[in-house]
Image 1 (tube, rainbow, N blue to C red):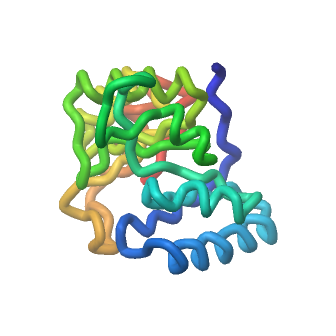
Image 2: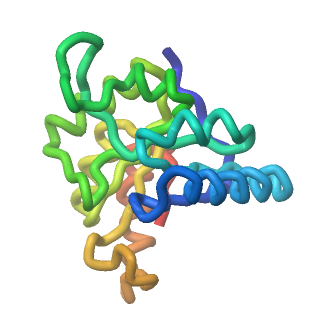
Length: 179
């Protein structure tokens, strides 16, 4: 199944596990309204249990899962089935977040499964070296962010954004980069 593309520019709204249920739905409805008003693509993450609710109530968001496991229908108690995410209305998935890191083998398998079911893939990378390695795997988007800066509101004081963007683009020119 071909993976859909994102329009640029796009934004990411990621409430992680701070909001759930009614609260995450209220934020999703606001993000949906703003996405429509400003004609901008918005990737909106939600807890797996809220994906269906968010997808059913919105029409302008790229509903995004926070993780998937590279399993197939069948055995996999407690794991996140890619087909289940699609059925719940997800159109994209985050992988390798600092709060849920994957080995290279797990990341590769997860990317392949996401591609098989048609999900846009956003893969987090902590360093220039990781950005290059992730770019080799061919995700839709590489999110380049030093783990130490997550949640601080600050970026690297040096040329991190420029270096990591160049590193990704040198390997995968069509891959989008988020800083």
